[in-house]
Amino acid sequence: MKTPLSFLLAATLLAPTLTFANTVAAPIAAPAAAPASFVPPPPEIAGKAYFLNDFNSQLPIAVRDPDLRVDPASLTKLMTAYLTFKALREKRLSLEQTLLVSAKGWKTEGSRMFLDPKTPVTVSDLIRGMIVQSGNDACVTLAEAIAGSEEVFGQVMTREARRLGMNGTHFVNATGLPARDHYTTVRDLSILANAVIRDFPEFYPIYSMKEFRYNNITQPNRNLLLYRDPRVDGMKTGFTDAAGYNLIASARADGRRVVSVVVGTASPEARANESSKLLNYGLQFFDSPRLYAANKPVGKLKVFKGEASEVNLGFTRDIYATVPKGSAARIQAKLDAPAKLIAPIKAGQPVGKLTVTLDGKVLAEQPVLALNAVGEAGVFGRLVDSVKLWFN
Image (tube, rainbow, N blue to C red; front, side, top):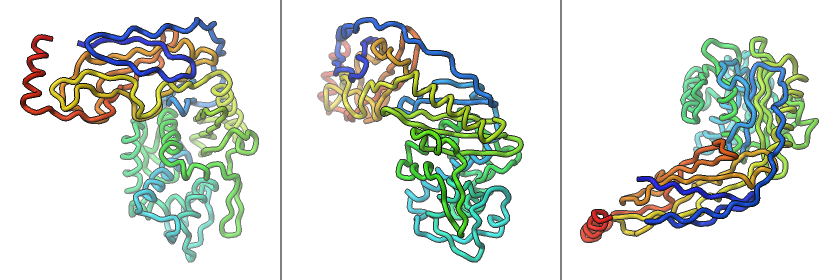
């Protein structure tokens, strides 16, 4: 049987520790009611589809046609970069390592960093050429170094997309040049952009570089928002005739970060302007209060037949909500968990569910985890608890 526990969270305070046993702790008194917050509808966006999310909470703020199949163009290079960063972390590449561009890479059409087939280039320069200059020659060179061929790299890209939860995506190349069966969605691109920022923060500052010089050629970053808005620190542009002008942009202010994906606009100016509308909307009208800190117990549950009689409950990452500004005091969280658990219990094992609501609307649902392992008790301990459970 599951015992529901409802409790209210203060606007900027972590919920206090709760004890779960045979009885349920009384709910914390609700704060004074706050007036309803005004939030205008999302701005009109002149593009094929868009997705705006809060980085802290990973919750969407505004979306249109999030699962429409679209051509990612050079936004593809976020996955090429993600796999490059992963190869560096796993020591399969090094920043100082030098590579030679193949004939295929050298002849690749579209934007380039102008690699010389006779001159080795460092992985560090290739990364900058890929991100800042959107160099297709850099992408092919990195793909071949990681997977042997661009074709195999495309398969690795799709497999990594599935691991990240990008279920509407299929990649066949590292560049984003038009190809059959090369597609994605703005929802999936949002997942990927957030993963780059979250998983590889040491490399993310490259996305804010305004220019990069290689082979005596200086090329500017095509993300116009880097020059116009000091809050913007990334991420990537894309264009093909079929895709139109695409932009993934990220901006931070007051401890918050929002990430926008806009595809299918009419010009470089339009993709910058439409992205700016979304970023301003997310930063101006919403907050993301932290509800719980990572790895900090928020409660306990009774454990039977275990080496310990209780297990700590909590989360392995900070938990945030995204709500209209001024409404955080009205957040309500309901924790559904069993009245008792039977050992063994693994650390990180889901043991309940947290549902966060605002004015009766569900904002998010999050598994509640066991923060510590509880092994089985000895024969005698299990026997004693069996008797207790029988009478309980």
